[in-house]
Image (tube, rainbow, N blue to C red; front, side, top):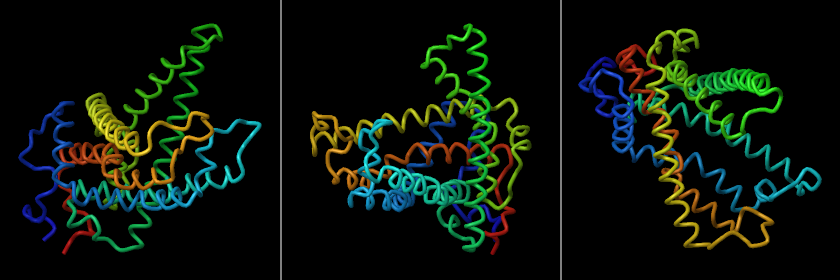
Length: 288
């Protein structure tokens, strides 16, 4: 039965500490990802495969060419649209599976009809777009405050970006239950997620940030060493950011590392979901 405690040993354990601590949430997410490294790697490879194929065949070359406003390379806009379509229309369905993998376990992440899967992917895309609009509004407010406080001079760009990043992390932390619930078939309103994470936002945001930093450092280190060893430094003339189309195949091989950050955010969200809302046992698409 769906409420059988032994149906899935890959979800966050009910024996885990129920408190909220940045380091504990981060380490728990890392351990959870490591336990599910197999299905995570397969999913990451599937996500990156279209990008690697487009890149290896030269379709994306114009996008990575160092262009200026007066000198856009031929095919630049086509490549940009393909990149956007890949990022939104291909990555978003994958995020549904990542969330479900950590919330329900790999045995149940695919147990839903194709129509339900498509609907949840579209809802997740819509929620992401709404989150982007909210963040855009916050950015405008921050810039207006900066302009008023400095008499129109504006803050240092680095400081401004840091403020916006912190705002994105905190807002994302407060709304994380909505994104998780969409993948389970229950579209929790942003307002409900905001209320349920009251008093936890900074802790969740801290775990998101720490996970992202760990994943970014690992990805940059591994990718940098391999790319430098295989292809050497970028071309001296600086005409393109792509030194070889074979680099896209390297991106494909390193997809599990590159997408560790996204997976860890889903793992943290799963832990928060379990602790605040309990075991997702009432999800109709996994009842048997």
